[in-house]
Image (tube, rainbow, N blue to C red):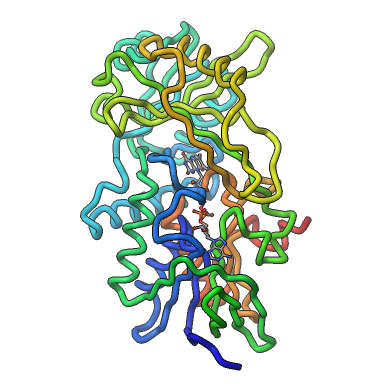
Length: 388
Ligand SMILES: Cc1cc2nc3c(=O)[nH]c(=O)nc-3n(C[C@H](O)[C@H](O)[C@H](O)COP(=O)(O)OP(=O)(O)OC[C@H]3O[C@@H](n4cnc5c(N)ncnc54)[C@H](O)[C@@H]3O)c2cc1C
């Protein structure tokens, strides 16, 4: 068979995880290893899960357990990426959670802070009003400030990690779709691409919401969830600058017992503030092409009204909206695993939480691919625990 290329490692899908895996692989692999990234769209594009200007990063995560170490390791790598790229990929501006003191999320976060002895400060409602006058706060609300938190600029992250990988000698094919993967009996695979066939001795698959197209183990396991982002315009922009506002999460109990959960980042463009919710879409779709192009007007208006109640400084209408998606697993845990006999590693199903961990998960994928040792990942990331 004629191949247009033969490589030691191919990374298929150079978005968030792919760019990080490519970068980490290019640092960890022995000299002379050939590494090729293959991306169906451009080196940067707006069709995957990483567009939308900002992402939230926290170390004090209510999930606790292994996720605290993942976040701590990721933070070190974010700072490394800042330094090596010379760009502000990660903005170390802290993270603020606001909610009633007896609310489950707030209590779990406090428990994690104590268990892991994490840096923090707690604020009562008076202190919250004084330090963060942007928010309408009730008497029972408290604030948890995580100084290790911050914002991530996702497009800058993908561009920078890819650039470092290329500087280290990796190659990148953009506008090249992998159409099929023929796994070989003795490991590796033939990738049928829109440019011809590639023989890859080792594979890392970081396909995001497209995972089900090429990975049988991910079909019907990684489902595509639409996620909109909205931006509001404040009357007093300086209150919402990164100097005056950390990234934030806000929970407000509703009369029906539910919670109005919103999250956002300070103004990056100087005139709008990202302020969004996961509540618009609960159902998944089969493919990224089926993601709706917008949010229905009544739902958007109701959301805007509620947001304006929480942040009185906002004009009570959405100034900007964009639609996105991510690949979700049922239990919310990613699949990051290696099938050693096939020399095949995958990092998919990031379930709406992948950005904060991305450089560490990229490193984990690179380590799994190089070592072919599945014991280096926690069991809850395994293919076996994600069977349909
Ligand atoms: C709106 C929104 C807000 C979010 N907020 C946060 C947050 O605040 N904090 C946080 O930690 N996480 C957040 N996330 C989650 C995080 O952004 C995602 O988990 C992460 O970006 C997923 O990365 P990925 O590499 O799996 O997918 P992607 O970044 O989409 O990368 C997949 C890549 O594979 C390519 N590809 C697919 N199929 C092929 C093929 N056949 N051939 C070649 N290339 C292919 C795609 O084009 C794409 O570039 C958010 C996600 C969304 C959508």
